[in-house]
Length: 202
Length: 381
Image (cartoon, rainbow over all chains, first blue to last red; front, side, top):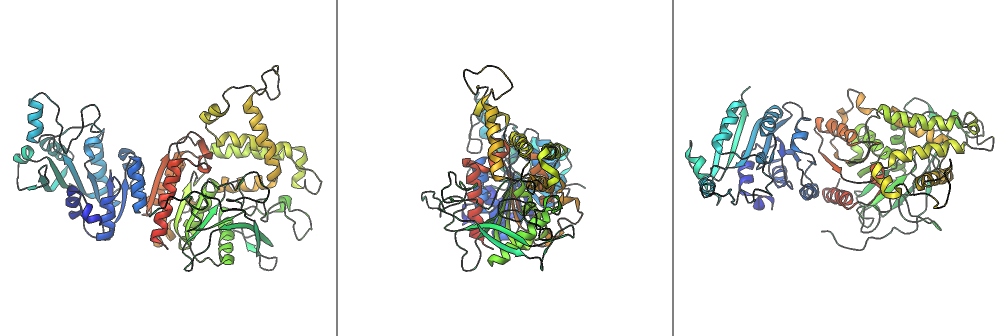
């Protein structure tokens, strides 16, 4: 049941996680990914979420969850205390994405990060027309958006570099959820979102 | 699926007493001292199911008692956690079997310092042995054995109650599947101990204290105990809660300025202090607060080793305006449990009312407990 309702990017994320591993999901929502991983892959997990209704949903589902800000929760985890740390569609809402990524690299040896791509061509066209981008991935007006940080895939990959995060895999897909078989910079134009599998160089 | 039945009361309840230890087979305390006989007052609500998988143990706070829910004959108020326990309530007694007992060292039916010392025939007074959090757990476990409950679905408590639950899950994790620790602490701060010290000083400096033998002298340190309660009560509420409840309203519109009860808040505290005398014993106040002062379970290097091999699903809850046991106390518990890879859920809830919030029926608070209990029941033992 959980599998059927798993959002496409979450399914992609789930596919990157080894059975039996210990997973930290930052911005876990109501815990659908973790519930799926606990059921289907015998994972143990912990979620971090700040939205009150989502926290309640995770509790009802039996997903251990911390009702804390991601930045606050992260500093409390011990080095290498998780196998995989997931940040799905949350990085853009963080005031300090650089700090969050470096903390994630401290806590786990494998990072799965999914992000909307502000460099997607339709966003670019929208900006060219003099308007801020609004799309399925970014369904907000500038004044009510929870997103604080706007990045293209190219800019994000620069930050990964700077933080010594090695991109093991990158999955890019269209607004309709179709996987793109693209490498290099063309994905930055054609993909509305991406999932990265990263590992700290250490 | 949850049904939307009317929230109800467990009805009229009675406090029962069980003799769990005797002079011949005494309770051996953590200190090595022996105590017997030991009687324990308790109440239960709901029914233990056939496979014994729906038992919930409520550990009460400093001045609580066994009467957590329902009504005693002729009482004006229900049990102290009646808003949580009953048909349709978060601890739905049509589904859960709920147990609540009075602490030893207390004064509301269980053996304590005002009980009769069998060797002297008089009240123990200060001859009553000092207690440890572990002793409370020993007695809770004995009551479970007495009731034929092999394992708990949930152990739950707020404040000192949460501290017992923490001690219990650390030392006997096999006893429970789930542990809820609310507005509690794993180690009192200097400020916490300071408040307790002043409370104890108020009691012991009262001339009627008579070295703890006040009962034999036919008196009681009423002034000291009521001052202790007045001060403690201030720490149980937030500044905003006092403002909302009393502001600066005068007690009497016409009264002249003086050193009496001029403000409404003074009258309230006075009332709290006085009514406390009817239900609480000064010696119990000394003994129970001392247990809290010394509680420091994570100080042991191997504190979490048992839990590591028998994980318990924990819930840790704090309230943002609680300054008696601030959220930092709960985060300390969380860090230790998470560090030991326990499944743990944490929430800091918004409430205007400070430490006492754990006794109130705030909708988000109760929704959180309801969701967590429902899931616990679904998963089972």
